[in-house]
Image (cartoon, rainbow, N blue to C red):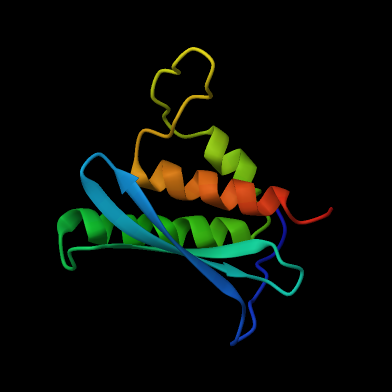
Length: 112
């Protein structure tokens, strides 16, 4: 693992809405100068809930891992998945998994 990459004070970001069951969440991804995702914020539509606090803490840990050089794809492959429907890939089992899938997809869009 490499040393932590510090991000610029102003950086591009993308916000997406994710769903897990009946719950909707917002994920904001911050990018470094090369366009790679390096931070994640996940917030619930209902502020202050235990789940929202837990997601925020997990997103912080993911951000630190990304800034230390861990690939989003590696993180996304390590999470729980729902059983696949024939003919389609397995889906993430949680909002955090959906956020990691979003990060991994954005990471793949950046040329190596």
